[in-house]
Length: 245
Image (cartoon, rainbow, N blue to C red):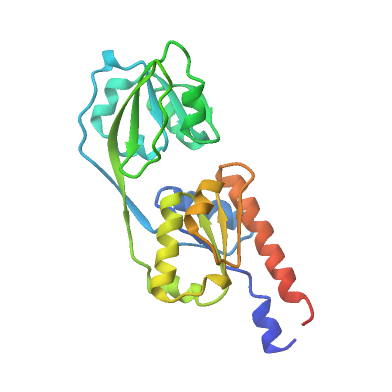
């Protein structure tokens, strides 16, 4: 085998860009499935001060991320036992662990759940991040939003830049991560054409822009589906390298 052939068969590095604690969970699952994964969190999540809403004025909670429960602080205890609408099973499990009654777990964002509210839940408290998707509020419902956490962007590290100097695959868990990663690559002069992207959904993929070697969306918006997609993309990339030129 020539030196060039040996280089071509090096596994494609899979880059995990999400913040902790999710990054470590994704890393463990990725490595368990045989991927050569590395964590380079592009954001650090921090708590924000916020003004609680009196429990008597809230029928249910609207949760777009488990970060709301991780960083909401002591004021959240007032809402234990309330119904909750949670995006994704990770957020739903965090809500159950906290003592909330999860009545719906969404897979396509908060909007579909908002459109299918229980008639008894017309006064909603949305615990959200500073960066969030705007929602269309159904007639007869009211949503009070409180920003309880923020995701602060981090710079590209030298180790990440070194891996991106060669073909790699990046996992995109959020639209903010997609946009920030694209900006960092452009600022560092990294060629998009050698980077593959696996996104957790179409809205996230759209934020990354164009010009990448490949960009695809997971079949469902969860970590397992995203890692399954990454494994397929890595396998296909390896097969391409083995083709005669």
